[in-house]
Length: 149
Image (tube, rainbow, N blue to C red; front, side, top):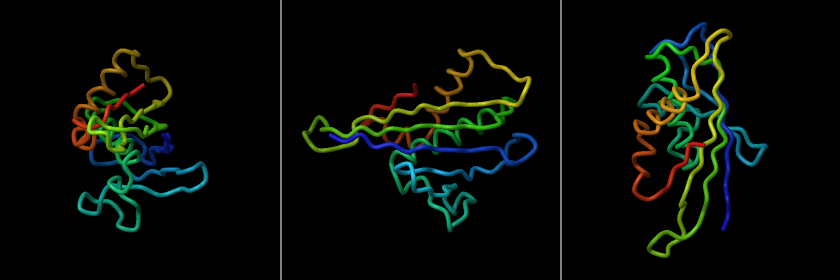
């Protein structure tokens, strides 16, 4: 069985993180050498020249989780400066014996503006809230195990 992975990189370009005032545009790296600019789908304000999260399963989940996390942080006043994720899709057989993505592991690393701190417990809770509200995670919830490590 194969393990497939992507890396995701986002950095805030605006002076502060405020609802509706930051860009969701970010880079997804495949196979350590192929970079794709990923954004929201055009219907949600993304650049149609960029790939959207629905085009690749692991990057879709990672991207959706990050965008949900950023929105929640913006509402909470948490000044996220950068976000990095290493998402890994695990292939195997599903309960029906068919080849499938059986698990996706997310490994988000979040950095905040200098001087801002948040407890590990609060950060973990925010990650779990992002997972609960992520529409890609909710779409996959019945068929794929998703681990935020």
